[in-house]
Image 1 (cartoon, one colour):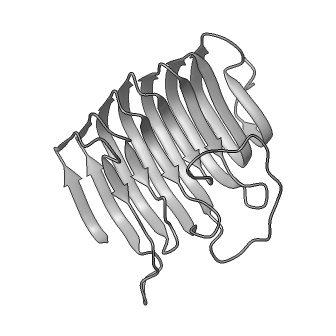
Image 2: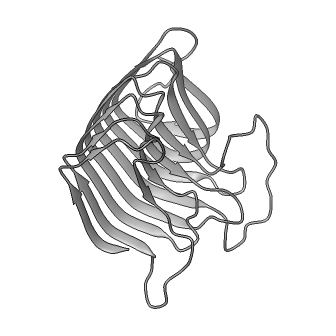
Length: 210
């Protein structure tokens, strides 16, 4: 998949509303999925704007702009797992509005679920690598949690910018196994506990505990 535009669509599907799946590398290309734009779309019943769960061939240069999510399970989702992972980079989300989305930000190197504990394993050619991700101008309400940015202990998620973000949710944003996470005008309002739940994470830009 290369040079794709998805515009002015209403997506009501029950699973991933849009899924960029990169199960195999493509000879002569740096990424099997690259240069993709999603603009002016409405996401209804489903699992959101997804990358994965297979990213072996790589995904790069995705821009999601001016989209609305209503009642989806996830909002912005990147998912993979050891043995079926690859490089995901240069991903931009901007001007996003979410209402009643269970997990507005759901970026994880685990699938189908995040374990409570894990130990580092050897890095291979199919270890998930996520880097250079930007989320800007996002407002969201959630009945569950602000979301997750969770990498692997042996391969952390790196260089993620969150700018002009306002999320209201019962529980905060979990950031684990991540570095170079930069917050600029980010507000997470929670019903209980801390707005940011950090573990092996380097977060810059504001005091994440406030």
